[in-house]
Amino acid sequence: MSESRRELIKIDISQNVDIIKGMDPIKVFKALSNESRLQILQWLKEPEKHFVPHEGVDMKEIGVCVSQVTDKLNMTQSTASQYLFILQRAGLIRTERIGKYTYYKRDEEKISELAAYLNQKL
Image 1 (cartoon, rainbow, N blue to C red):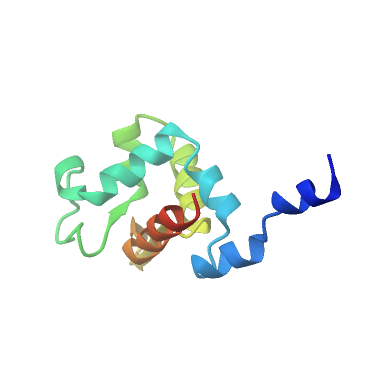
Image 2 (image 1 turned 135 degrees about the vertical axis):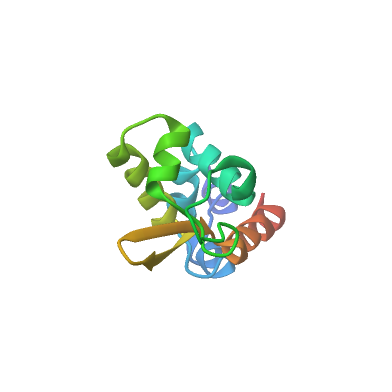
């Protein structure tokens, strides 16, 4: 491949990171590459349609806990926790600790930034 041709296909990943404000595109795409993790994000978009609420917890405002996700996915709690951690590390979900429970919800701002990034760059 000629030198000029190689220069045409270079991508500056530092610009990509800035566009989605601290999200690592590789971590995001890896997190989205699993069907169950994608399903979790879809469920969290409208949690009241997909989960039985904890007493006194507004799932839309606070989120859902790992046991709710575990029950819905029909898998072990450790696997569900790992999936939620991967989504959180990618910046797609946020957590809130209340008492002994940790609640998870989508980070809509980050997801919107990701959508804008995809629209601009791909």
